Length: 132
Image 1 (cartoon, rainbow, N blue to C red):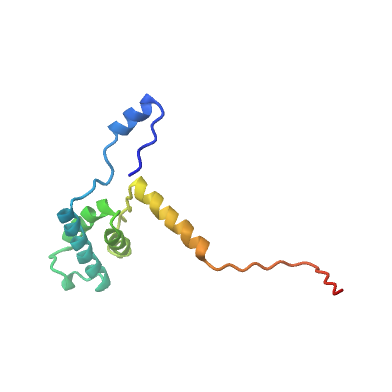
Image 2: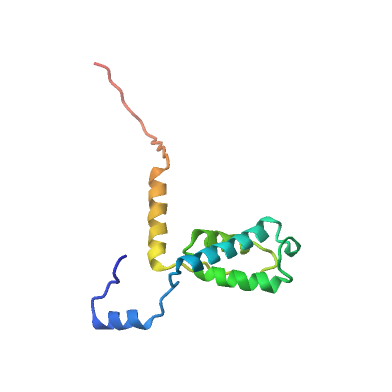
């Protein structure tokens, strides 16, 4: 775990005053959140039809998605919210909230992926070859 960058006393005060973003879950709560995300994924992948789920109305699944959207550091939750945002019945899309630590990890993954892509460069110009 990386420590926060604190150089002045005001930095420490700001750090302590801010609420902890995306509190870490214990194992049981994490498994419950993943299960809820899988329920949302099932709803999304079955054509956004409530009749294919255990929910009575759209408000129930919306409130579940609202809870899941607070824990998007978990990849399953992030995928569920991304697919739920594609629902045409949804008026206000959920913002995927990531902790700064996890956002840095995802940025590093994307940088590493872009380095692994094959790239070919073409250069135009006049080239002179001589064979001696």
